[in-house]
Length: 294
Ligand SMILES: Cc1ncc(COP(=O)(O)O)c(C=O)c1O
Image 1: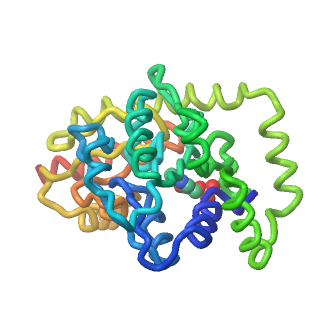
Image 2: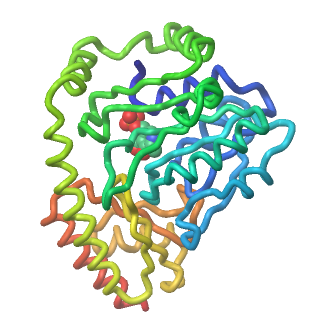
Image 3: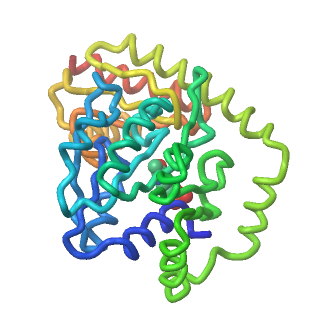
């Protein structure tokens, strides 16, 4: 158990990586992966994926990025920021490359339960016993149970790795505070209707936002099948993502996240982890901003 999914990933990079070890990270990526790799002395190897390939790394792309220094591959499905979800067949194809090159994979499954349109979560660790031996899972309670501030996550994987992470943690943060851990037990052992209820609300907001964005000139947004983000392309506005987000914030008081933080400067990230009324207001302002520029 760790202080959020974040600490599980941090601990992993610290105990696994030696100086110069390469970690393959498909972009767009969650902001902390490359920084955590660098903090541990490793080298992030970024593999760019495009909207046209649904932001999913292909087995060929993965194969090409592998060098004798490669130690670990990062997979995050459903993804923050794109919301894309790998199908079981796609996971199996990536698994084969990992097996062929005897690599480790960290599967960040924190959005596992947040899926739409019949999308299925398929963990790479379940491909085969050989893959399970090479898989480390990072997970947490912040998304499915909206327990973000409780700081609850966990690392699961080969005993040797998890024991090393536990040693590191015992000399730093020790443990997640006990009453929060009881909260995690309650979340896992209680009826799961709350997750289903939340998914209905997320699905409604996602639909509303996609419809609104598709009516805005110059924004292109692929349909995500998981998580609670949209990742529209803003290239047509002629602005880089930092300038776009700064102007939108300062002139219209709408907070979005610049795509450059995720390795994709021609995008912005919108979150729908807020109520529909706020979303409506935010999109009205975004539309006004866009129509002034495109
Ligand atoms: C992909 C991904 N992994 C891990 C985390 C870490 O979550 P936490 O530390 O809040 O459990 C987040 C949070 O936004 C995330 O989006």
